[in-house]
Image (tube, rainbow, N blue to C red; front, side):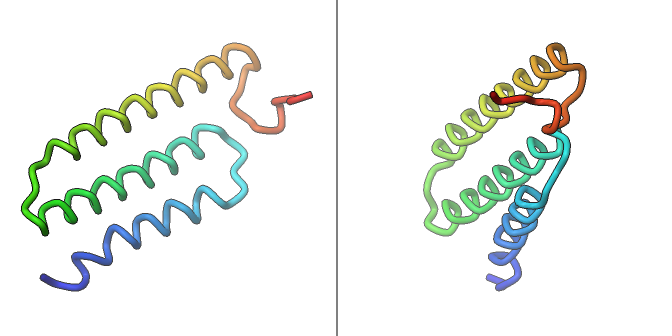
Length: 95
């Protein structure tokens, strides 16, 4: 296999982490970067399992948990927008 084939998920993961670590003002951009990280991990998992000729059932379970995580994040975003009017981190008062 080509080495670039294995470096692609790592590059996607690093790019997603850089976006997540940078100071974002909106919750939606943070959630999108988290989904990008999960998608890169899913690609890496598929490549890893195909290398050892395993079944893809574990990847379906992982994808199910990722969808549940995305739905939970979107529901929190909707709750935040309805209660505060926007998704800025500065408008959320924790105290």
